[in-house]
Image 1 (cartoon, rainbow, N blue to C red):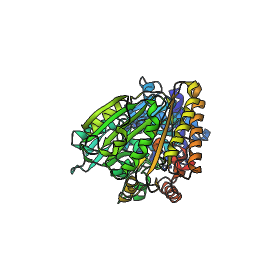
Image 2: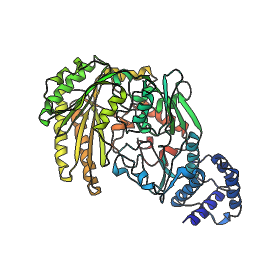
Image 3: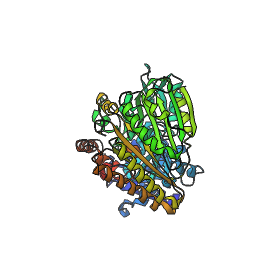
Image 4: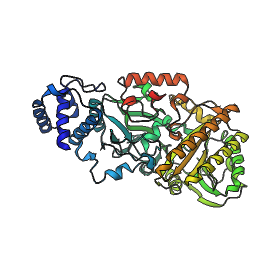
Length: 532
């Protein structure tokens, strides 16, 4: 196999001397290609000698299979121990990183960059050969193909890019995209700092920030992306740029919640705050209390409008209810949660605690283990209203009953988003998400199951649920268009849910920074502008 692929590679690079290798690459000849790869003198000499022996006359241009085989051969030569082939001992372990086993695809090869320059070289190879690719940070996105790819392409696995540092004045944390938030919280905690971002230890940094990122304290700090002051980005043409309020400010704006449409992020520079003390407690409730809990969460949401320190984690399923109270000050059982205190609870999931962000995230992560099942998610948004919330819950129960024949587990999450959270973006340069004004509920829905043969049943059921929910909220005049990337399913056209003027601006930004549309056509899948 290797001998055949070597011949293909040498032929292809030789062919490129008299014809453009692909419409995506910026290199027009083999010398430029090899120069951008920054090969050692010995590697350069060996490859150049081989190229001179190739008969170019018989070459018309390889097919996609040959392209990816050749790209992987080149990547092997360039990246060495950072290259993982399908025969590598840790290959299977790496493809099973993704949170949903429905996303366990088998890429032709895996590149694990450790530096920004490595990512740049990976893009040189991908664009030169016109090879399909995908990018994975933590693999928490359960949408098939969004952070995975099959044998037709290359997986760029960012998990080795785990640098974490703090600016000299302590105001900005620089975070590599391969980190998970547990490691970020621990590292910053030793320096007395935190960032307001991921709420589960094992969620990856990269996809979370690019999806906007709901946080505990949206009312105080907005969505997580509102706190990114600079992105280091490798563009499709392999150039490395920074995007912030002063430099490439349009790209900076566009990256705050629109997914993987413009480049590969190699560093997030994020506002940090002092790691203060927070109060939190988590309670389990018997399912007979679910109706009372729905009443209470509406009262809470209105109370939170007047207290930006209040946050909540609220989820229900037919077997149990869970509510976590989270307050941004060391005040035990403050008044915004008073409506819950009279509802009998079944047991304590998390004891009443005054602690750090590390304590908070560790506590919630402990009761949400990183298990692997087949999963799908979906989202919808609407104004808070007691009747609509309970009617949605009844639609959810109907959905749950329909999937019991496949032994599925389901759940819903109520996520209050306050007026203060909406307004925060206006103080931090804006973002493309374009939340409506006023208090709103960004509902998240989930389903998990075990067997591949039940994929269609599970997927169809959650799609039908969202269709029914949105039809109902539209009928009542409570529907809100905007969706959250991180909570949405593959069938939901998230970017088209943004204000039309923002979508137009995103298209203009893509045309400027990726004129060859590499991230629209070679990237395997995602919430892409090309699908919006």
